[in-house]
Length: 420
Ligand code: UD1
Image 1 (cartoon, rainbow, N blue to C red):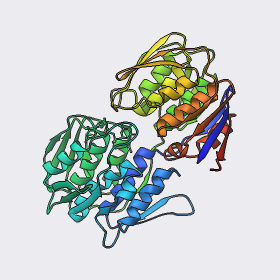
Image 2 (cartoon, protein in one colour):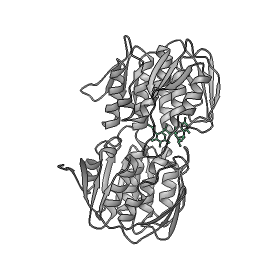
Image 3 (cartoon, rainbow, N blue to C red):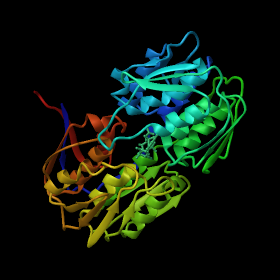
Image 4 (cartoon, protein in one colour):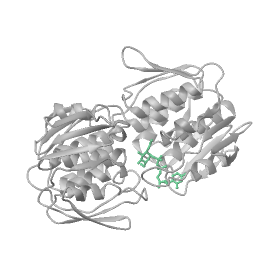
């Protein structure tokens, strides 16, 4: 068991360089299955989820390794297996993303059903319904999704909800389908756009990126490509809120402010002083934030992945904030932990009513999931005294060197391997 020990109350200051986006890297690693050529991904973050995706690829018979420059080379030549086993899919739900590429490349797939996770039941009906509409025969049984198809055929798929994963699975299946596919009500997250850019570099013919309607003209084959993964906007938001929590002053680079529109707007409404120049975002805060209401929504709405961090920040606001979670049903698992640190938060369905307190007090807490774990670290940074965050394995799934980066900004945070 690993844990972080944080002495709170130190304002963060300095400049931080962002890592590549986890949620883009994982999808492009899966997309590399679509060609027997070598693909090269740059700026892949060094995190546990990437290690898990490498294991998934290796299980499928794909070789994936980092060269000395840190670029990830993926070679999917040769005979591939169609099986993504439960042992790996259960470690990382996003492994389901190999389903579309396997069907497109092999005409068959045998992928473990991902099951529940800590932030909700997370259905996959939209993934499966879309693949069926493209002509795949999909059945589920004995804990696995079985898919097969001779040819995938272009069609119109209208998603009930702009699911990120379903949009990406369908993109990667449709790119090699016969004819044209249109995905309506597609997710518009920047990571989806980054995947479209990569697929088009591989020879795909996809248009409509950044919009809710993606048009994919199927091609016969794809080739290898080199792509640099976009900076992680969730890491950017996490760092900005960390600085805000501590009344600090930081620069985030390359910050791609256009990916953080509503996040910067909300931070500004709390009283943070923000400026954007070239690709650098600067933030300075002084005093307690003003209370405000936040609702999570698909992009360009406020990202659900930053909901726990903004809750930690608003827990010390002057006034009452209402935080509404609209994307995942079970994303408030960390509230009891924050309340143990002195926050005053009451849950009412998918709303959290946050009565701002003057300050949080350090306490031992447990990270229930990746983003909630990051929020508890932020709470610890802003709190008086010592906070110990247990179960940090969750956090290391998605943040590259979080504690080193925070230490670089002046935080007093150490990682400790607890002896059982
Ligand atoms: C991705 C991100 C995650 C982020 C989320 C929303 C990755 C690896 N993860 O997750 O960090 O929080 O987008 O921005 O990229 N749903 C269905 N049926 C489906 C698919 C989804 O009902 O077939 C529901 C889910 O249960 C959830 C909502 O749609 O309530 C959003 O899910 P989705 O957008 O698919 O998120 P993920 O792709 O799993």
